[in-house]
Length: 337
Image 1 (cartoon, rainbow, N blue to C red):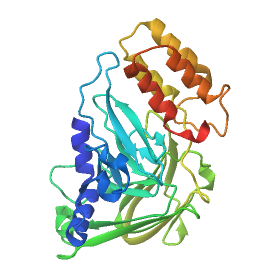
Image 2: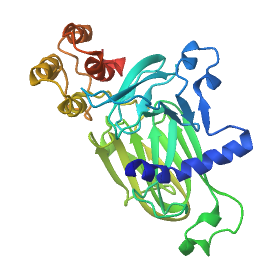
Image 3: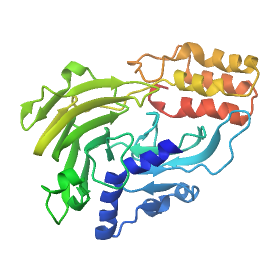
Image 4: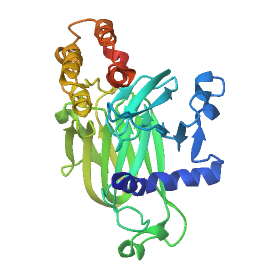
């Protein structure tokens, strides 16, 4: 619970921007799925699921957890036209389908579609109050063009910054992403910035180019993080003075990485309250087919057809609560089937 309370605080840049949109465009922060998809019956079959602002899709779990797996489940619907990324695990899900999702007590199904930008306070433990951030972490999901205006009220600056800030009006930073070029462009107002390209790990670090005000940045830090961290390409820029233009080039037409899910399955199965013989049967089916989650397969193919693996799992005759956990991850992303 502590982590999610801190996340709510870190979401203040997103929430403030969305609330400005709500006031100016009559777009409520929380919207049911059928508002955007009134012609699709599946949108009405998930009454608890909702859009949270323009960038996030949330599928609340309201059932008790299963005693065998320790996991609770929810039926989620992913609208057509996009792939979706779990912003906590980095798992990529196909759109235009319904799927049962399984999560631990300290997890929550929240997704961002291709072409999403989500600004956060960079502080993992923000200070009390609702001051404007001293630094930003911006989640970026590649796959489609994207744009987000981060709005702030200068009156909410920290006391140290308040004396030099404008006394009225809103301050903004504009973040744009261009899919064909693989370029992120940000016009920002000072402070430190981290850009996290979620589920983008198939990038050569030496080919990532970062410019600040038209010049190559010598201070930027670039790394690729893998599971159990959120799999991402991460670009960190130190504090900037005044208004600055940032460009990050990650390569033309980048795509969300294809991940295998062995590491996450292993972690989940450790807590299953089932005989080791059952776990061994499940593991025998999947063990030879996958490399660790968080590192891309680079186009490697399964040794056996995907349908054979699923058929073998179903043939074990185990409870849906057990097999469903495995099938969620195996069925999430069809690109490697």
